[in-house]
Image (cartoon, rainbow, N blue to C red; front, top):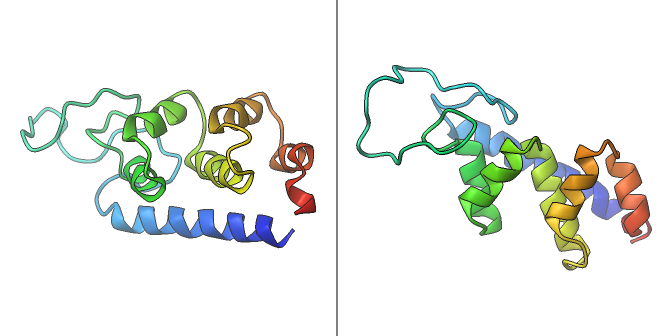
Length: 129
């Protein structure tokens, strides 16, 4: 049970840090809207956007990718497929806690199918650790 509390607190701290460093970017960990500013002006210093957020690069997704050392495109795909950044980080932490016995994709699929974190953690025996 202590590990679950630690995972939840860690995820909340990561979200808070990512949102704080976002500056004028997205103001929420789950926002799918476009950023403020003039979207019609080209910015040669940023890559062309290829995701559902309307951003050149989403600050929170980028922070998750850097923190967990995974590709940005993988994080943004999970997000565009319907997972919140909270769920993505909890799935990453859960997979790590289970020593990758279960993939992040499997965990996120369960969340998208309506299962709660308690149900997922109970099923994998995380609550017993």
